[in-house]
Image (cartoon, rainbow, N blue to C red; front, top):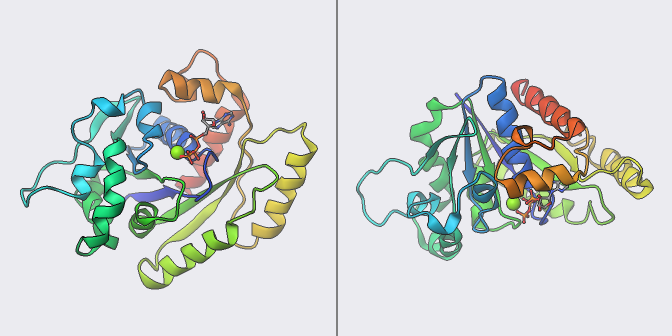
Length: 255
Ligand SMILES: Nc1ncnc2c1ncn2[C@@H]1O[C@H](COP(=O)(O)OP(=O)(O)OP(=O)(O)O)[C@@H](O)[C@H]1O
Ligand SMILES: [Mg+2]
């Protein structure tokens, strides 16, 4: 059975989409079959994978809210940089409203993924920066959650409500959900503030779950996203970041 790992933090710009893409790629390098799921109407992951969201006629939106009862295959794009992708575009913004009235809405994503679960070793879900219904159904579908946290001044702000959300989901809807760990991101070794933040993350969250080694801040990472590829496939690589994603991939195998 595949591991379904959701990248979740209601804070924006903490490298959820970047981590989803690159962790997925490093898992594929280790011979795993990987499906990436974009459940963010901003559709950054879909762009990072080299697709133009506005060109897509069918996306995860059609799978979550089908127009009729007819069974249709999931609109999965196969073998993009050795991974498969269930993409999103802005149409998914409608789902927030429409799912409110949907039957068994909490289980919607779990039901969508069930038929393809056996085809993959890892399914990675990239959440929007909110605690809304799209994040909610992702956490219900997942076996594990990774929480990226930016190494900056306000890093830990909002962690309480994040942990409460996870506890609520575990209690009511998905008792098997485990926190795989917290991933400090955008870390600059030379920045003393980043170092203090990293210490606070370890002190405050170390008892809750594993704190993964920090992901460095590196221009090459942002460039790779613009290029529409994982960092490892770009001419300008950043070795410490590639090593971090390797380590993270190994940690996912050991979950
Ligand atoms: N390690 C890094 N070093 C430098 N820039 C990075 C790094 N990781 C991500 N970025 C850049 O920071 C921006 C935000 O990253 P990303 O889109 O992955 O965050 P996110 O948490 O998914 O954001 P959102 O909450 O909007 O979905 C992007 O432009 C990305 O290319
Ligand atoms: Mg994102």
